[in-house]
Length: 234
Image (cartoon, rainbow, N blue to C red; front, side, top):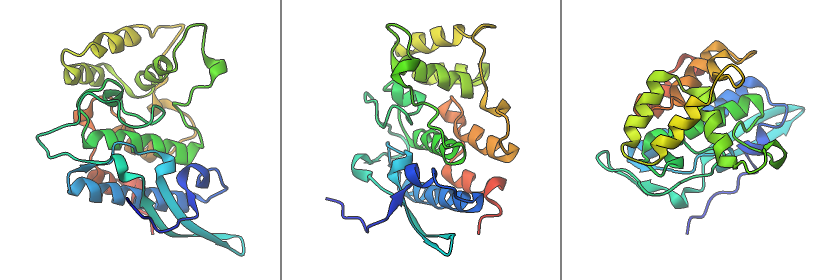
């Protein structure tokens, strides 16, 4: 049993408030420090998502103050030494899960980083970009198919896609990702995150490095903490 100190909120609801960017950056930076601390001990969280990042904050005279941020829900975390991996399970939540986790392939620290990149996008845009409403589905269409299509649309290029397919090896998911990638055309163009409007270029660079479709090319937690987007966090 894990007993946690009471925190009055989590990122999923905290980010929906009218919170100033410096506080959002501080919350993300402190969350990333928690992930880095786990990774230093070869612990993979496996379920990084906005509602697993606890935020203890208070409002005084209209000003918000962050008291503490903490990664929670570590019941599914696993000790995974560098020469090992979690395989055969779709770990984590489908709305935040990495492509290799969807494929039940080798899951290690980079999967946490991909999920955290999606949390970062949510924190700034207030959108869970892989959430799929029932009314968005065509007849017979599966939600997971839409999620995978969005992952490739937003975060893949030819090099990273090739890296992912090599990472998956002889998995049947290679065919699934290949078919999805071949489905992009003039009528269904990709929508790369790097081209999204009204988003800070430094933030795009940071998130792009965390959400590379190829797990081997993702930035580490420690490298992300050193990124220029976090340079002005108090």
